[in-house]
Length: 185
Image 1 (cartoon, rainbow, N blue to C red):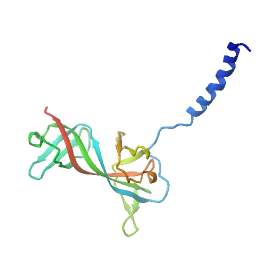
Image 2: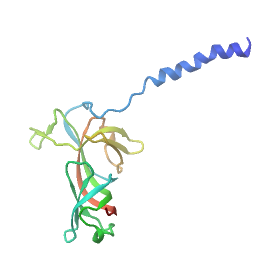
Image 3: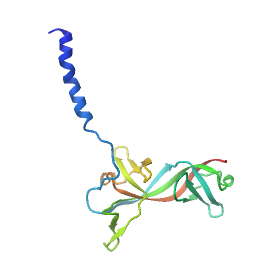
């Protein structure tokens, strides 16, 4: 058999597995209903995150807190200002900041927006994001917010990522601002 004829015969055989395997992958979706019973999967997961630009709404130097609203966000977040922040005295209302913050996550598997409360009765849970994907090998948790924005967080050891899946609900509690790069208008 000539090499040209061999090439014509082998090409379809080599391409077929690539075509079959490419059809197996689908993009992750955060709107799926997670499997299993409604429950709190884990709370107290502290993560560090760089947030999109935000506007300073107020600074309380005596209490050591700052209130910022992400551009286009419906609500503001209040953070305790950590000792790492050196420029608190320079910040004014209306400044644009690029915050790096610590937050605490609680992850739930919900049924119809509810999880069992302390007495076992269903309690409605207001969520801030949903799990989009989980990568236990690198300890990555990818979240999707209601506006469609996505964020990938590195979680500390001991987080029960094997129990989490796409569609799980996430409640985020602001803890502390660790960096507030800023720019005045």
